[in-house]
Image (cartoon, rainbow, N blue to C red; front, side, top):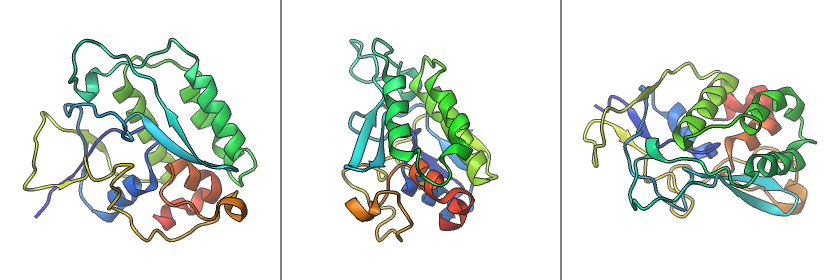
Amino acid sequence: MSNSIILSSLYLPPISYLHAIQKHDVPVKIDPYEHFQKQTYRSRTCIGTANGVLDLFVPIEHGRKQRVTMKEVRINDDHDWQRLHWQSIQTAYRSSAYFEYYEDDFHTFYNQKYDFLFDYNIKQLELIFKVLKIKKPIEFTDLYVKDYDDAFDYRNTIHPKKETVYLNQKPYYQLFEDRTGFIPNLSVIDLIFNQGPQSKNYL
């Protein structure tokens, strides 16, 4: 019997991430000790715009060490990426039904500096849990385990290029659906800004 769900810390995670959390009635454990992987949702999120999907990347510092744990990854603030990300989010969602309701909560993450990507992602996840009224505590693993025998492990299955967690996602109303068609598995903020309090029921 699996006793927890093991997840990576992701930047404004996709809907499939929250679906997995809601699907299993077990504690949520985030892994700080896994190695950072490029081209994944750990530092990337996808939002829906009038022109389709827009990927937003948190820039990170690349040191000499090729392999670093998630909790060691530092954010690179050489460029004003936070302002650019927030402008993109505003442009995509300011006309959505619930953007103004949640705007101030999410704007906090774009005018406050964070040194580490892991901390940044976890703070966002705490807000997302609050918005979605998910009552599960967020816990952390004590060390890296490659394969779990007693847990639902989603660290490598929720991935931009091999999504298998939430196939056949039921459509919900999206702002630019008339232009782009329904786009599945965007960042959960797409669901929140378009569906508001109904988001949890959708998951």
